[in-house]
Image (cartoon, rainbow, N blue to C red; front, side, top):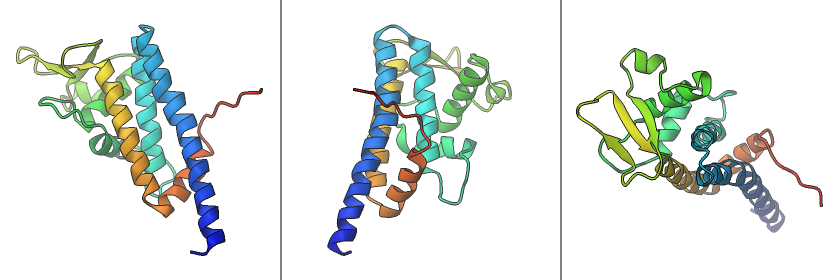
Length: 185
């Protein structure tokens, strides 16, 4: 790579970083964290699922023009690790996302079909995930830990983006279409 190509790539990487942080980190993660601090639990959960959707969309294969269920589940399985027994799977979080975003409910097609447990939400639990053998079709998820898991996933996804010039170019192009906030001074 020539010096001018290297400089152009560094500028592209810096702009991609700025767009990523403006739209995903500030626009989703920080807003979800603020919503949680203000007791706006549903808003925090909905924003977090929207952020997971956005990451899945940014990271989908180059040939795919739309994000789908498989992309969301794959993104969760790769980037949202709770590290505890009984944690919800990518399928279960997809199911929960569908329930809350489409019907404002814990129920979804997957829970009705027995393919996923229902996910309920708690605020500031001692554990990230609460399970009860008496309720095997229900898992309670700490909203704080859902957001923390999303934050860790963002860090890892950015590392993956940064490590691949092709992915930087692809994500940069896709970030152009995400919601951005511009402030006049």
